[in-house]
Image (cartoon, rainbow, N blue to C red; front, side):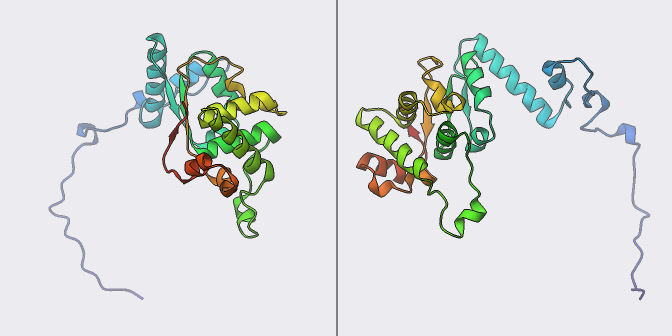
Length: 225
């Protein structure tokens, strides 16, 4: 079926030569293919010189400048960085002076603690919510609250408390844990943690002392030292 329509009047449309237009992307900004034998530095240098490629180079440049100038380098990260296995990389960067402090959340603490205890983390949310088992792993709730409670009673913050607990208990995979490696790696005194307890840290908060219940009820971040 043909639909009636009125043709557009194109008599007033004006164009211009492509070369006269200002363009945001040129060949000089294009990525350079990686060459066999080149290192990571050459790979990064070969990324597009725009958007995320330039952002990454700017971050690298700023971190290097801060380290050369003796300034603090604070990393803010979420739980996915921990649960996807980047802890060992972060520990190495700490030891070499590229990380002065880390700001993370309660989920990051939970994943890190589970890695130290079991060498695994990140439960299947979809399959656990229905039967009501999400966040109910015994060791995660009970031992993490125990670590926090014992630390708070000695005047420690969450990060210090968990780090000390793991150092004392020495679970099987503490060497793969950020909190487990914190004490062993002799990080500089300016090293601090920020965290807010969430999820399974607080599933048994009603059994915990007032200090832990207050932490579980607090939104935002809690200073750990």
